[in-house]
Image (cartoon, one colour):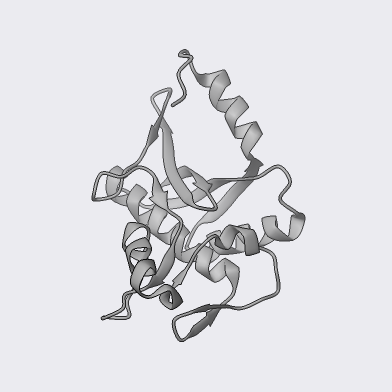
Length: 164
């Protein structure tokens, strides 16, 4: 049972694992390790889609896609995605579930938990909503940490001075 690190971003997201003293960013089946933070429904099958597929649908059917959902986390609103009305944490849960699937495929084992980064100025209600999104995605959110803290921790564990 693995715990992953997730940067749930406004426009892009990443999932990584700390193993053998190194951080490894995990890639999707197309080899992309930076995932577009888009959620929507396929315009033909109406199946949920995340990432690059959702971003492609945005061009022709913007009403089927939610973008920049992170900006709405913690708000008491419903977001229209196709014919559905979803809370922001439900939309984020789809993105988190996709990142969880990427990790499980890469690691070959279930992923049960995550540490999720958020902006340092993220209000408490948005942090609570992020935790709820993780739970909806089937993850135990072990910690929510500020992005600058994550950067400092990563720098402290790195022997190299590159930007990866």
